[in-house]
Structures are given as structure tokens and as C-alpha cells.
Image (cartoon, rainbow, N blue to C red; front, side, top):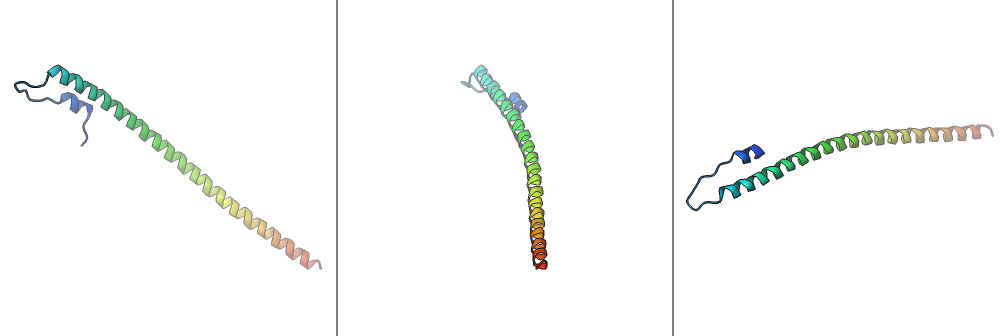
Length: 93
């Protein structure tokens, strides 16, 4: 399970003689928390954008399919008109 900003905030480290400066560590962790929260927000926004784009893509795919079928029907109708015209002109002779 990934870390949350709260996990970082609540993390405590053991103390030792000659350890790190506690204020410096806390400042660094605060910066990590801010950056991590920003990344989470950005990721969520990007996920929402992806969802929206996928929906639009699906819509355009449906339009493409409809146009393709329409072109086929129009071509078949044009072919039928040609064939009927040929039959009509040969029957006139």
C-alpha cells in the first residue's frame, strides 16, 4: 500500500547520540508532504482528464462507425441506381 502524506507526517525516528538535527528532519519531511500531496492532486486531475478523453474517444469512434456505415449504404444505393440506369437504357433499345 502506498504511503500517504499522513504516514509521512506521523513517522517517528529513533534517537541516538549524535543523531540528525530534529528541526532539519522535520522541515524536510514537511517539504516531502507538500510535494507528495501536490503529486497526488496532479495524479487525480490527470486520471480525470484521461477518463474524459476516453469518453470523447468513444464518442468519436461511434461517429466514425456511423459515418462508415453511411458511406457503405450510400455506395450501395449509388451502385443500384447505376445498375437500374443500365437496365433501363438497354431495355429502351
